[in-house]
Length: 390
Image (tube, one colour):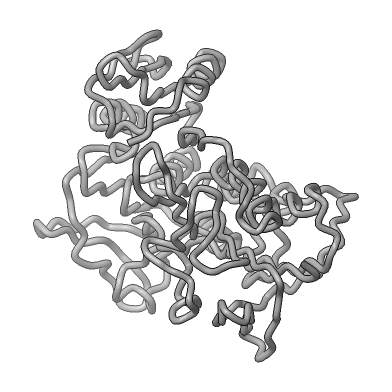
């Protein structure tokens, strides 16, 4: 293998490039990135960067003296792939042929149709998104956030700390309820409401109003929520459009085996665009969290370099964290597998507790809210428990 091309220059792509080098690959290594920026850390974009606590240099993922002998092709997007020839076509009219390919193109924020021409409507996925939103919030008084997932809840908390009047519109029971379950989702809702966020539950947006600039959000029941800025946080879709007709099998992302191998020999996928097969759950699914990229990069590199013969260790349960106000929320596992949820330590009313999710007697998930040490112990217990395949 003389040339490997990593398509995607964010966390997953960079970590896989590092893993290739650390596992002994000494050939040409090309990293293609649609953004002009060097790899940067995304989680702070909705928190400290949005608040102005840290600057762009603090987001850098590369160390000052890091040398991986990489040929960077930044500001150039992949537009097509011939999986048989392993030829990648690029937006600048050129193409690359590689012996091995890593697909790490991530995901793109969902948008609301009809808002493209309205100023003051934002999604938050990239550094450029964060720059624009931060500038708009600096002169705004009222913010409406659509969607109570990670981005929506974090932006709502950050904007409230900046002193804005914040309304969070959620189609479900509570923020993060899809991940932590409805019972604990209501605890997250209480956190926001105590800090002054107005929550509108079980609500659906029919339009963002305004002519040149957004001036509010209209709900299905006719309610109009005034706004100077609107943030749309309704999830993300895998960036796989450039792979249509390539010969690589797609579903909700690039379909991969347990080691990141795709349906095409010599091609692996990692990060938010990759749907790895999970033998525990018996299906493919994407892990859209920072730790997922960290854990899977080395596995994908080993799969590529071994032509698929490397046997990965059993996947760890999905883990994420979220900082909202002065509260650190940590979660591992799958709440949907649980029959019961019990508070083991602390008090949800104080927003400092640990909750255990069980299926029968088996621990399947753990939630920690401002309980970092205790959560670490429970997390270790869950990660080392015997794997039960579905």
